[in-house]
Length: 338
Image (tube, rainbow, N blue to C red; front, side):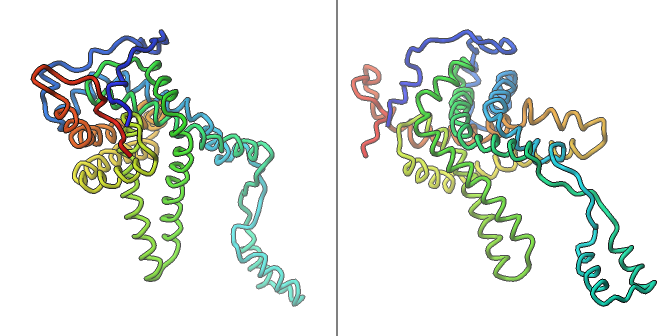
């Protein structure tokens, strides 16, 4: 593994500014850093770094900009509108009556009822183009996650951060691993919900088994994602070892993972509630994904994972490398020995 202390190696700090967030943050005080990594420290860290989390959310939205084209493509604005029968039986009934040649008042009434028209939409050339552009998200997903994971890890640890320069630094250092894993990650993140949704359309024992299997696998992988990107920006490990370690962490940190999942679920539920509640709250529901939702969910996950990783993978090796005269610097404490 790569030396953990390399995260603090000297590097040029660029002076990008957004909401004046590029200043060196103060981190947390000595009293706050002595607090155990529980809810009290979480809310203190969250409160003191809220503006940074807003900027991180903007990074996520802008970094994954192709997904905006997916939203536009799924909406009906770029599609071609046409009218079609509301009932799926209309074509069969119409063909049967026409073939029999019996156009009685009853058959005409049935045709009138079943032939009620409703707007339908077909893909246009613009829709297809937007879908093609949105596919670029598979290339941005991993590198944006690794850049923001590095920032959020430092925020959780109480370290000062330079938002934009740290974001770029983490991407430059990890893009060779983040890019291929990001493609795998977004495919799994899309496939599992699709499988769960598909199984809801059927009934029967075998479909129930497949449904619950996907739910369990989805929860495990969702918990593994808490740890994957944090390890990626902290150590130099192969993707196989990242997945292996994350699977172990997802099991031994089950209590923390469940709390984090509940926190993420609560934020998403609030967002949906605002979107589909009174018109007064709809603007809040629209603004949440743009400003706070993604970074807040990511911070909850990083906070739940970082201290578990630190306890098991960092602290023991740091203690071994300490002597009475202080830490030994002639050998890195985070080396992958194969």
